[in-house]
Length: 366
Image 1 (cartoon, rainbow, N blue to C red):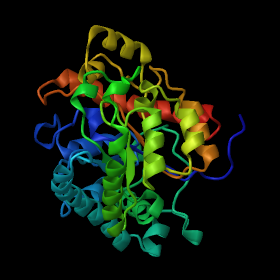
Image 2 (cartoon, rainbow, N blue to C red):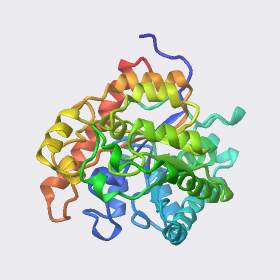
Image 3 (spheres, rainbow, N blue to C red):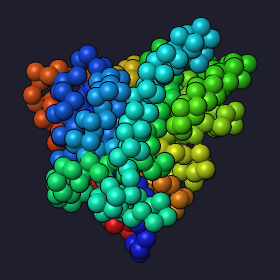
């Protein structure tokens, strides 16, 4: 395949969940150690993980700048099916938006033309992105800390790389217990509930836009928006942008390459995640739930599942996608004292970044 000669405006982030961080109060490693590990593995940024694990509106901008990393966004789930619960959950959304806007505003303050030029970025025309790094070499090779910080500020000052509030819905217990394909239609949101459900998603999206941030909605196994048909319905009933998760879509019966082609006009963030339908079938047959699927390796390291990553990247490039690509791997939670699990998580995420670079080259994009 012939490589592209023009730069592709994407940056590659990691996420705390790939290191077993699901709760701010029980993370197996501290935020500084996690960010340093991401930087050393060659990632350009990170998802926020559970607020305020990585930091608050006061501390996170400086912490990211110290490590030369951007912020891709972060997950916020709200109870769209429950009017009272939804109103209560808006406080959680506002707290996340405080963090995201603080990072953006700090970047805008630091992202002057002089800073961008010092970072080696091309300012003319507002283009601050370059070709996706192919994963060769340690992240530290990108220069001294102040150069990394300037580059990260320039990315975040670019609307394509501003933090994306990642709207989602909480787990639905009966669907969590039977994740993925084949879906049980009896567990789906009733037709009559969809207009109000979609209306509340629209309210949440408007709240993000009022703060100057473009949200994305994340479909997910074990929730009300899981299958390709449910994603289609969401897109039909709202104007919210989409966070495409390749692994969750695959296990819900979808095809990530076809989804990129069909939904390209709505995709504003991508979570690249491998997945195994064989593991899913085994867990479903044994009566296991979503946590059992994760523990069994239903979301393996990149290149060890079913995902055709070069095809996904080629279709993203063809579709004109620009922005963050977040490499995620849902791994079992573990304790800080579990040195073996931590070492495995760190090694897997370094390998994931390298596999991504190999896939870029296989797709003719690097």
